[in-house]
Length: 422
Image (cartoon, rainbow, N blue to C red; front, side, top):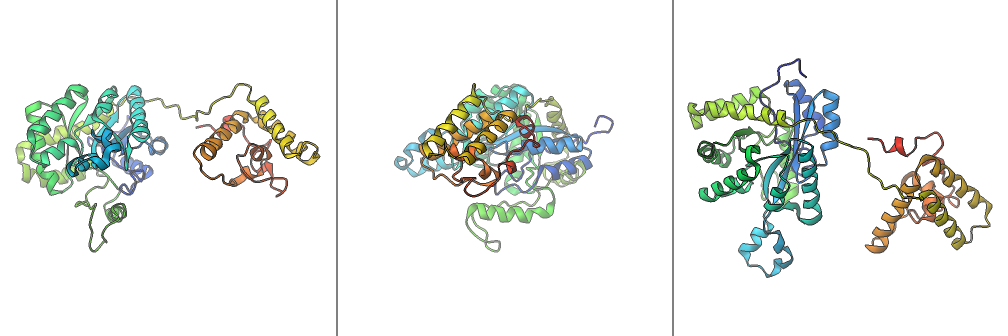
């Protein structure tokens, strides 16, 4: 990567299939395109989640690129009113339902940890149709994170669209005060009239505040021809309209593919006529900022191993629980069942899976007994485990139905360390 000249332009606002019913592209596609375009980085910023990051890491490793981790978070500062929704007037109900967007990118390990915290917080505490955060929550976890003014659906752009320039500028000041030199004014070249009008106002903010501008393309798919697939997905998401008569959520741009630097330069030739040649310098700085942001993102060492609890004395506890259940079922005198249980317990201990079985039992008990979900028979090769049956992880007696434990675990298969390795 160091031996080749990097493209100045990098896509830093990119959605994958994990932006549900909105993004169409895959990390592997983006990595191939980035490599061909002489880019050194791939940045993924899905809506409200980090689910694509493992695939991002794998794809970048495969193609000799560096991953950049981001999220386009949903923001709503009225979420606390959700429990009182029915009591609200119509105007306030609209505010409670609405979710704005802000783009966040981790530049170091602290930022990576904070993005994980924010995503978790949004899903665990802020979910209302979408996983949402308040502005204050973002600010409290801003260390190590770059923020941009976002797309047309951001709080700043929405105020500009409503001709509330003072309100937008106040927000810019507040975000810039929190993020300091980690806040960028984002503008887009996507051939969409509403965004194009907002761009003029964003340029004025850049001039007046002296904040760094950055140009993006709001990538939702790999190739231009994929725009049709995204249109279908948006119609499915909105549950309204057809291809011939679209209604609801429809995006009036088919320019959201993974662009190269040459393609962005071609677009600027069009936009130069709109904004004037005096904006050439702003475009050049904005393009360079995409690479600068990626280069600001230092190496982030990620521990991808699974974090399963290790239960002290798990081997003994597992054996006691299984033999007690054997007594309850009256199987203690049945040699076939006893031999099978001894065989399984010995192998489970040998492979280091005792804590794993106990953890699975706790999860199943919580879901079925505490939350009231029905207990399923079980699926896959675990149906061959007598231990799983005795712990009520499954409801399939492997002796009665002649299923094989060796399909689930055998001396020749890897142990816990191998099976759970990253």
